Image (cartoon, rainbow, N blue to C red; front, side):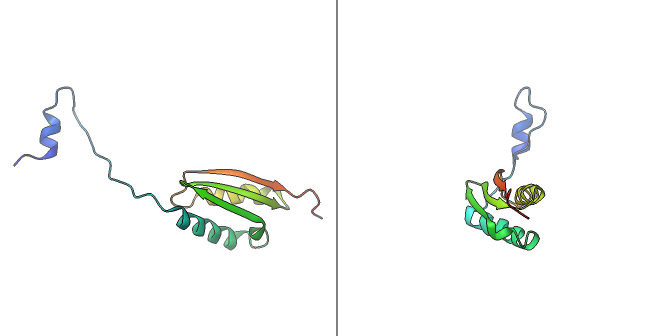
Length: 98
């Protein structure tokens, strides 16, 4: 019986080849729930002010937070969620925060 690796070895010029496993993309609805959960758990006071939109694994963050670091952390935390391809951070800093 011939295996796929036997076939690959006989192709002239090919020394080694691998086939990447098929990766199932995570549905946007699952990504949205996961990002919301992460933000709710870490930015308890500012999380409700952040809106999340997910399309094709791309996460858009919008809203206002009192401190720059919160916006940066939200983007970093969202980017660490499984299935997120990229984060577009449009969170603004509330200049009127006391």
